[in-house]
Amino acid sequence: MKKKVSLGKTLAFVFCLLFAIIWIAPLSQSLMTSLKSEKEIKMSGYSFFPENPTFESYTDLFSTRSDSTPIMKWFINSLITSTVSTALVLIISSTSAFAYARLQFKGRNLLFGIIMATMIFPSVINLIPLYKICAALNLINTKWALILPGASGAFNIFLIRQFMLGIPKELDEAARIDGASYFQIYYKIMLPLCAPVLTVVGMFAFTGSWNDFLWPTLVISNVDKMTITPGMQILKGTYDVYPSHAMAGGIVSVIPTFVLFLFAQKYFIRGMQLQSAVKG
Amino acid sequence: MKERPKKKIDLTAYLFIAPQLILFLIFFVIPAGMGIYAAFTKWDIFSSQLPQFVGLDNFKEILTNSESTYYRFFRTGFTNTLIFVLISVPIGIVLPLLLALAINQKPFAHGFFQSLFYMPTVLSISTVILIWYYMFNKNLGLINNFFHTKVNWLGIQPYAWIAIVLVTVWWTIGTNMVIYLAALNGVNKDVLEAADVDGAGPVKKFFSIVIPSIRNQLAYTVVLTTVAQFNIYGQPLMLTNGGPNNSTNVLLMVIRDLAFPSFGGKSISGLASAMALMLGAVMILIALLQYRFVGDEE
Image (cartoon, rainbow over all chains, first blue to last red):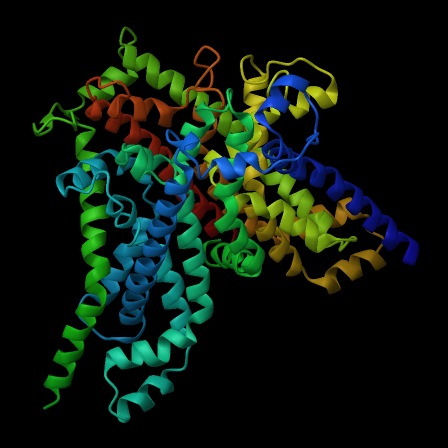
């Protein structure tokens, strides 16, 4: 019995290890390349490890060398955009979820139903007119064009409302009797209790905004105002000449979402599983 | 006296939902309506002229006028997208299921494997391509140097498709894997043990116990993956730029180029909207099929 179990485990381990190598290879190769000097790459042909490791490509990211690919500017633009996006998503979807979960008003179920039904609508249909609307509102080449269109997502409202429905109603009724306003109930009772689901929604909002690719290439044409994800496409263009710099830029671009993943991966994974549980 | 507090709730409630509703109206409802209408118009989004209604002309042009360049663009784009979906979806279901089954055996370091396979899903497509582009380099790439080959990965078929699918699989399968892992956790252990006692082998157990217990998650991931892959854009754009010979020029690239021409050409947004509407319709159809499929089973 015991032998049989360990055979299964050994096979599973070998299988995982094989794929782990494929998963690690491109990541480690880019890290190694970013630690080479441009000269070494051109002179000595292929090698996995750098002969003389150097941080030159990273320090150059801050210098005038990267004027045509201002990675640090892009990084800061992305940081601001994604942080504001996340805050806005959290505020808007939690207030709205609170109303649909706890307050009585005319048209509540109809409105909620309509918003939920739109989840099935593919964004490719909106793409072209959305540009026209942002142009009409003078948002082109501003961060608002990246922040506002994604802030009203239906699925976030659904997740938070679902979580609120699981919180005992007696809590807000007691607060009502003590004379609390609905805003106080939302702010002082519901929000703290919703911390787990807000964490999940916030993390997906941040990574989603950080990783947005197609939309920013349409609404941001000014290189200095670009975010880092579309910036990577420009950086790829310099790759044939400066591979080490391109890789250093690529490594820097993943830092925020990667760090978020390291510290909160159980929330990411739970969030994914939550979605499949409610939609599947 | 009973009326007053009720009215007050109404007003407060509308204040709570207002910010979302306003953004939803401006950035979702209106563009969605415009997007559908635009498919039946002639329209240049960079001019101040209003779209001009032309009925079904755009659809006729794209679907039946074989003389037209746009007919060819649409055909190529749609066929290429379909090829990608047909290759990448089965792999995107089977491989994460196998990895989930392996990790579910709890081998040494299974926690590490789970994190590693999931990790690329938090990266952006452009960074993923930047990282992989170097791997495919003919002379300096790891792949050719490891296998001692001189394959022109991104310039010749079928290698270009292999490269695009490989990168996509690497980037995306973590999502399905963690969904399957949660599902496998819910498979009834007593039933599995009873099957053991009856002498059922692992293959038999897999097909007659495991698969039926996780079929809802399977249906969900099939739809989710298919819809996601119909949206393919960044991989061919950045890896092959649609080449060689337009063989990886996918529909979203065609739509983008028509509506937002890169060198200041005229925007053909009406035709592009018609193509977008058809692509969107395919995705909605697939999503609706899931409801039918899941509904039938229960």
